[in-house]
Amino acid sequence: MCSKLTLDPTVEQMLKDYEQDRIDKVQELLDHPENIPVFMDFKVDYAFKYILGHKPILLKLINDILPVDVSDIEYLPSEIPVVSPKEKRSVFDVICTARHTDERFIVEMQCVPDLDMDNRLLYYGCSLIHLQIERGAKTYDLKPVYVLCVANYNREHDGNKNAGQFFFGYQFRELSQPKDILSQNLQFFFLELPRLQKVWDKLETNAERWCYLFGNLNNFAKVPDNPAGFDAVFDLARTDELDGSDLKKYLTSMLDEYTVYTTTEYARREGYRKGAEEERIKAQAEKEALLKSLLSLGTPIETLAQATGLTPEAIQALK
Image 1 (cartoon, rainbow, N blue to C red):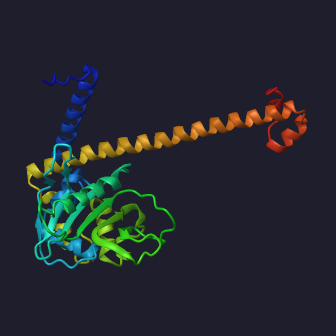
Image 2: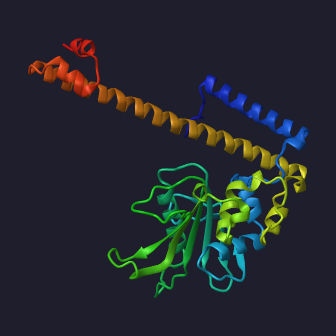
Image 3: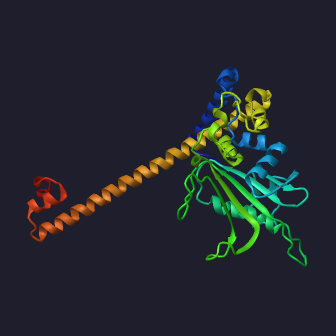
């Protein structure tokens, strides 16, 4: 029998304080709706699922971004069943299938870098491949699975990428012959939002417009003069069109995710700062060790001062 999990009183109080602070901030925004941006932040989990939960918009995204031509889709459960207790659950942001071709689509939002994000997406895609084949099947008739990740950060890439490239696609290919494709039944795509460095009026393709909206929808003060066919996205994303319950859910989700993003970004920058400081201390120690070694060999202090830029007094102090 499992014992009841208890928290350290200090931690428990911190959680209660955070919860109350969030409730207070949500209520403050509800009391002053003029402080709420006109449009939702597409990167917030609630907004992402709410907007893409409308079939015409998700259908437009799929056809604009992916190498497919889909006429109709059907939403699938966000969690797929596991085959054995040892398997990890797969819970998706948005998942659907094409009605006439049975192609599957997973769309995920990732706001902060995650070391195992690519592996997680691979697991998700393979899960949808695995579930297509029933026990006892005589053939492996697989339908394509497309995984699209909207990444609010720059992923690392090996080799040179095209200047201004923000959209990346992957499939199984022969290592030395990229045109020799093993299978197109599992493909991965990434929209890397920070890599798009354009303003709305300079965007040329719908892929660019999707990338821009994912990253900047909440920064619009009004619908642009040229919505370029994205009128439905702007209409649906209006915060003043949400009823009281939905608006409260959105604001709560927004504050939670902003807190997570801020905390993660601070930790990342602190890690870089501490790492840089450790490298500086290490380099300084190595430099001093080298100077001591040269002094022990009789190298003149004046020579070392000229070579290193240190004063003779500083070098003398190393003796």
